[in-house]
Length: 194
Image 1 (tube, rainbow, N blue to C red):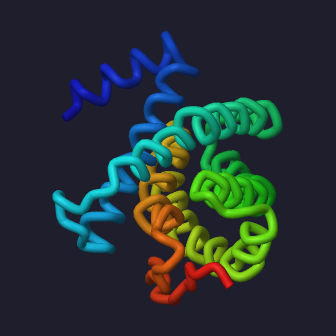
Image 2: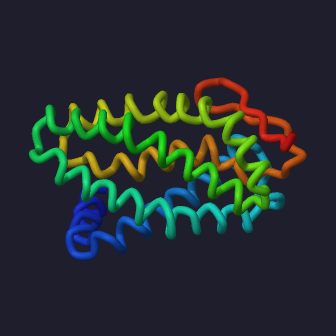
């Protein structure tokens, strides 16, 4: 495991954008597989491969580049590798970036699911707050652990949070006839188009 981590770090230092994008797309795809298999309990025969491919596309073309760019900005705004700097980055990330990013993520996934603009807006109004609260339930504890362990691990925030979030919210591509799913907070989020 240590050699795998070292190899990842070497690749990250040589090809940061490529590794960031591939990691994000892969983790979003794995999150959707987990969502379909463990949360929805579809089974391999009923697995919606098209949905997983769409989610990976969001990871490759939206999540990876946007989050990678955000971390570059964040590194310039908050300089240093101390725990205090890591805490500042966490607060900026979760209070400034996460609300905007989550809205865009949910909007894009709704559009790829075939929702019209009006349906997507209704869905965002209905589900956004629960999704953001669930993000905080997942993000803050993960980030705090990483801050206590090492401030250098801060970049894993993207990957680990996406993995958790996509496992919870990968259900954006469920059929419009499906009624609800349970978030990590235990709240039920309605997925019907009304």
